[in-house]
Length: 456
Image (cartoon, rainbow, N blue to C red; front, side):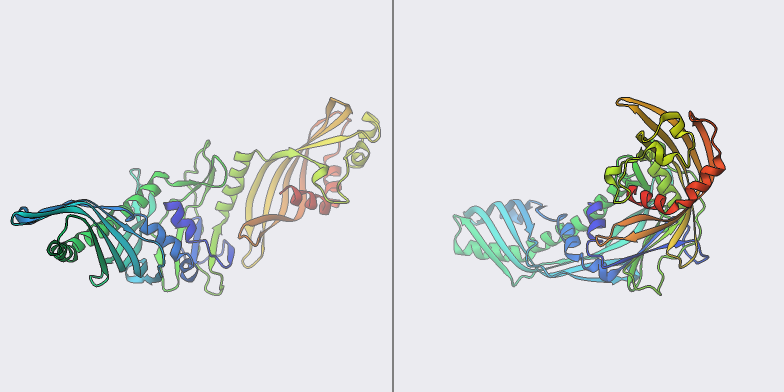
């Protein structure tokens, strides 16, 4: 249910912007601040309202015993239709809530067995009632809840709850040995006490069951949610309750990513960040701290290991060639003398570290550093491969761009590569000069950037 409420609220996003926050501005001490325009959220109002209705769909109505042993109505049920509804949506700043309202709902009531008694005469049967033009109004207020260990999570309450049945839009269908006199008595009773009971039962279901279920689901996350892949988690602990303003809803969360098998970060200091930049017209704004970005890539490497092989079949022309000893001999002299010309070389890579993000305000990129391990395997004969060279590339400076795709997904792109340190871990082709390797790699940085972006 929580996932549905969150996702449906984002279904109709028009556009988005991501601001890398390190500038001194007021805000909460959270790793990620989100601001969503209420006009965008309103585009998902029908889907969210359907989720609310699900809490009172087929609600059980208590059995009714008439006074003076005049009869009973038992096995009662009520079903609210989701068809032909027109949902209104607006904010309630005073209650820190958003309100959903529909006044053209329809419903059915079923009584499985009733008995009416007048003197020595009685009627028995079952009843069906069609109800039109019902009004349902539900306000979802935003607050927080505290776990047993003191951590704080988002939570909801219900406010402005109204459920009203129109007495003028009711059709009663009685089945059984019912005389016309009893039919009138049943209709009068239904329009009076029975309507009040139905209204009370539904309001109670919304007021109690809805926040109880949602808050329990949030609490059961234990403060973190799975992010895309197994074991990859993001912390959703919050420092303050979500805020409803005249035009947006804002929320700040810890926003640190981690490998579930390793565990979350204990203590991290975040810079102050805003929720929303009013000079931007974007309907969704994310202010992301450098600490959250560092945790994102660090945990990604924890979960996915960050290793692989150079595969020419995945590269565009003219990069789709087989790597050979002849190609590498300029950077790694000794390849050809040791193994001969045009021997195939397989390149194994592993990203050991990627992070230490730095940014400048209003710049579309970030600066990050990386450490990569490279292994060059020479194919001496089919099935016979030998590790010729192993290198560690240290302090690789990258200019990193995040681009938005049409489906609102973000893609990572490397715009610049600059290598500052090389370590020769192992060499079977003789002594190698780390500084020469560094200079050679920096002269072909455009090729390296292209290869890296294809891998990403």
